[in-house]
Image (tube, rainbow, N blue to C red; front, top):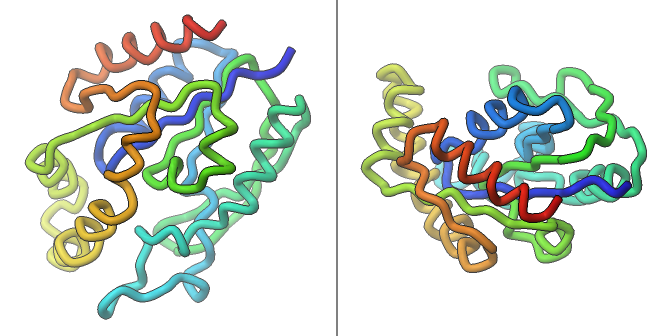
Length: 194
């Protein structure tokens, strides 16, 4: 039986990774794949202003992501890179086996037509800029450099590349909802396709 492929996109700090982790814990037949596993090594990333731009589509190896998704949809095991943000490179690989439901999440996930067309359902987690800023600030723990990157790179890139992809979603959910409610909403969507 072909796995159900669910794409979850939305701006950084919308709660995509946390949501997928929660759904994976609920059901042993769920596999979670992060688009961030397909970051290019730092030396291959473009610059924006004086920063390495982790938020540009040019920073993601979409060809590799597409290959992995095709293999999984065909019911095949496949290795995926494990990217370390601290080291800014792939540090190892892990074997992923197809399961009943494959959740794929990433802020740029719907930016490439061939990839977004692969999904049985496309879910966009929307979030207002105030909540996004609070979550990003909490993650940074007062790191001024990260806050500067957030303001000068992440926000402009999200406006240019992420927010416009909301129009490709089959479902738009409110990322400010409590995580368990959001997980219930996504589980209900998934159930429609099973």
